[in-house]
Image 1: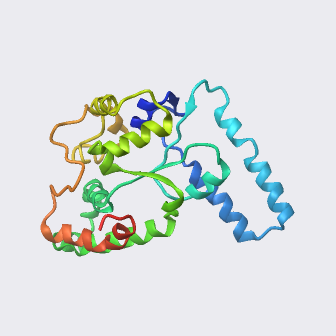
Image 2: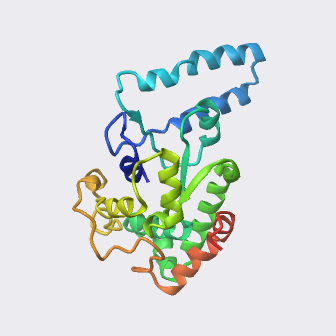
Length: 245
């Protein structure tokens, strides 16, 4: 999504093109701290101003372009929207099933160090348990999607016409759907599924351009039917909430 946005509007990321900054999560922590300590309304307002006043100005300081800040979490996005009401706030969601498949591939070696997990791994029991916990965790932080501008990973991958038109209109870009689609084809992405890079996270963004073997949707490689069933069953609630079933 970040790379697609760069095709539509000139923008820079504060710490570099691939940086991820937990701005929403930090603001969420501050917000929860107020609720925990129950300060007076006057003290609440005073401390908020100290911490957050002119925060946008500080972020944009010394910038000649728009600033793109991204992070892979739902935590705090509603508070972020409240704090910066005049900026773009875009959510990208992906089928939790595929997210979990990627997670299991990335953490496989570490998981199999534990005897219990190693014994249960072939039967999908661990996959079900982990997926259910993951589902509950995401649901607890999920914002009201009816009040958010969101896109799906699948629509971007498949270059859904209505989705591309929506993005072009949103940013007022002088691009046709065809031109944007062709530009998206040239985006270089990480596509190794963490098979080769699972222990070399620092080098992920230096990996080679995308391969033709990469399948970003409905992935099954490396999993048996029981494991995939465990993932689907464990993530049923979050997949239903996000409209994937």
